[in-house]
Length: 306
Image (tube, rainbow, N blue to C red; front, side, top):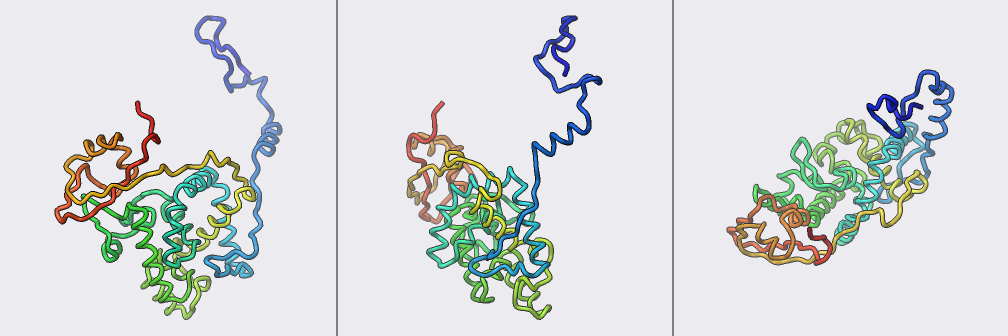
């Protein structure tokens, strides 16, 4: 290994660089041994008894087994994304779970939010937004305010309520939580049409497009991995997980002309206000109808001041 490159002529000096002189280069056999010893990828056993919302995944079917195996492999060996899901789940599942329980929606649907958005307020190419990827029409039909000033699809509590309403209607239509989940992705009409045209009544018997065809398997894979981190090689401490910052809610039933000044009155800055209220889309609140809003403010002392 070359050290102190060109130091003898006074041009540059470095402690160590990963450049080998030709005569010192490791052999192909040595490098192959290093690769094999330092990093290994293993085939996985697809566990028996996998289910979604109490409905079994029929892995005795070879097609279903292969599709389930694919999603377990993809999500096990996408390690950086997997660790982020563990970290975010610790922060956001405690918000989602009580709302699912309140509506009688199985807790397994929290993993639907994981695959929809990675537990982030993202926007899809089709314009779906938020953790639950809600389209504008669906949001408005279910009572969300959506305009350039306010977009409640970015409000985790309210968007979870809307997701529950949609899923309950789909469950009533199909009689199956698995099909209700598939309908969340493909629409109730889309799933109904496929079931009728193919003469089946079960998600696992349907021939579907790529996205909906992988949908349930991705949910079940994330459920399995997030519930068994050691089994799939994820190592972390509780302190490594993201924690929710405690907040309290301030009632606002008037217009707010300047959220920068509003933030300063609570001894935070505008960025912190937006982090906790992403549904506020502009630096002011019109509120011509004098609607009552609840704005979350972090408890004092949780953000250091410069």
